[in-house]
Image (cartoon, rainbow, N blue to C red; front, side, top):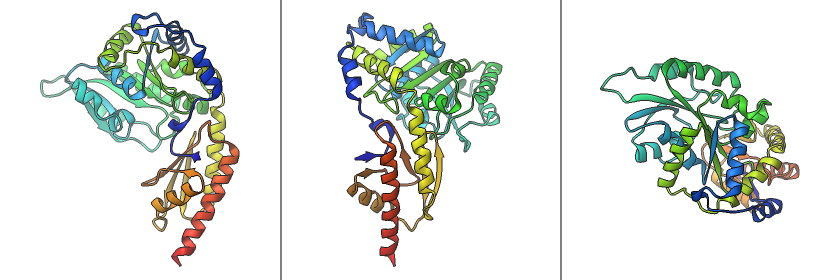
Length: 340
């Protein structure tokens, strides 16, 4: 199957599996897994922070970050369409009594500086205390420019706020922007980075920040069931991804652009492309559920409903994009012909 549903569907290559099997192991809870220790130090150096911490998932990484930064009754300002607010089961509020203050997300994926400023609470017994700004890069595939983070950092400093970045696809962002990870990280207090999407690891994220923050996050990770034993298996996969799969992300971006270009010729599609994602507004004359079923019969998986999203990744080659785009065109024509 050619699976466009998400880059989370990527599977570890045989080379990555070999690297995992060859990785030295220990008990990470006792801090004696050499592969974990080495990879965490590597990520700290790469991001420019003092320390890093391996997590099972991006959701747990963001949760530990929010709870390590914020106390009960404190508030984080977040985009109403950002993952940390809408797609993580309300964890910060449910488990930490941390109050979200959602605001609108601009079309380019940013939060307006004026909108952020307007919801920062003055010190008052009636209000939750504004503590943190939670950002995202990429957002729906959009790579957010470095200058924006500089402006948010300035606003945060003026108001004594912390900045956390959900950087699940941060390597897609820095590939698109042609910058280094440190350049973005200098403007935030912590970052969560996912390795199980476009980088192809089967599981694992990394949280980076200063040493005191990471120690707090480690305790919360343990409380949330994330204290792992021979976690070097994950470190081996993530280290392989870092060394071999970051540079090839441009291939995914190029394939997404090719897919968008070919699909833009379909009259019933309004196509938008960012990094490794293609978003399509589908005309109401096309039944998306039926389209998805017909595509599946031809070996192509998509997620129907609302705005159609197609995601390219390391398991999708240029030939797959060409086949899929031609197949989608043929099926759309067939569907329209059947309506006559």
